[in-house]
Amino acid sequence: MGKGVEIVILAAGLGTRMKSNKAKVLHEIHAKPMVLYVLEAAARSTGEDIVLVVGHQAEQVKAVCAGGGHVKFAHQKEQRGTGHAVQCAMDVLSPRSECIVILCGDVPLLKSATIDSLIADHRRNRWDLSLLAVEIEDPSGYGRVRVDRNRGLQRIVEESDATPDEKGIKLINAGIYCVERRFLESALNRLTADNAQGEYYLTDIVAIGYEDGKRMGVVVGTDVNEVMGVNNLKELEKAAQVLAARCGGHAVF
Image (tube, rainbow, N blue to C red; front, side, top):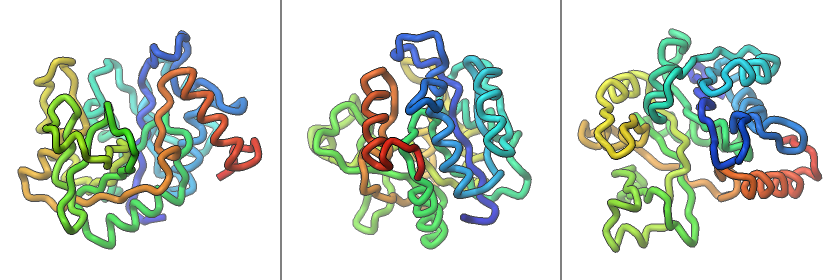
């Protein structure tokens, strides 16, 4: 889908809530590591233009993913947040890539058609940054997405910082981005770890873009399950059920 587009998949996390020593993205859904579902969806959109950020059990993750086509790997040696993970990928990106799509290795239900729609909307509207969001009935615990009347992205408000009115917003951040490379490089260089966790958050690039007056938009997904992150065994089981219902037990998108 898109010349000059490259996909970065974040797959470095430990995933302690899975109650296992295995890297989270290697946990299987229908006998296949969940990261491969993400990798295959990405490949349908951009072919070989994919960078996988590895960290915990890096060699095992690389061994599983290396056979799924030509994938480049970036190593996040220290777990210092999602913003830091993307920083680790920047030196590995192809020099010809102009637009970067950022996906998560623990979101296995995402369809390639959704990635394509995000890229197409991003280019059609000439956004500097596009965010995939979904509406849910109970947004508790999620970052709320504020937009203007023209669907322009204003900011992501974390629940702990949200006003009572903002807590009523049902549009939440799915954690999937499409960003112009030039802006992404600039924004990543300006991230700080001035927060309780001492990490570099990718969500902060939205605030940076707002301060810079960048053009930022939102694509609202139609399927909440599609952007569901798998963080524990219960969610792993749910993902398996959704996939089975979607394609008769065969993980084919």
